Image (cartoon, rainbow, N blue to C red; front, side):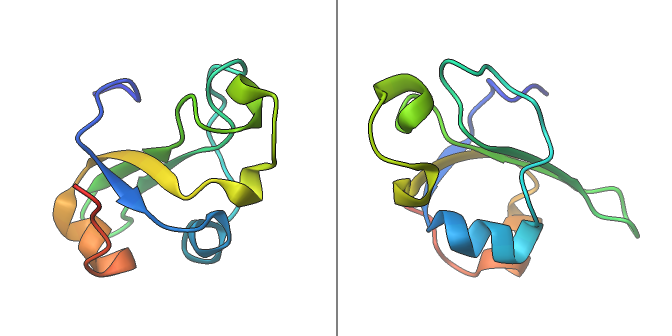
Amino acid sequence: MTLSDKRSSIKISYAKLVEQLGLPNVKDDPFKVDASWGIEHISDGRKLFVWNYKNGPAYTGEGSIEDVEDWSYDGDIELMVELFGNVFAR
């Protein structure tokens, strides 16, 4: 699985992501992606990846990462729900 394998999208603020996941911890395409997280659950190894794509200042040249509310994700759906509840956009 790579970060380009988008499973779906969520609508959530950057601030809420940082609150739940900490600061972004994955280096990604600096021209298309502003923030990326890779998470592995310590006890069972479930993985989750969250990133924005072509909708933030790295790509548009406008606004700030704090303005981004549409995020891509892939990985364990149950872990996503545990962390964020039912915030799925589609």
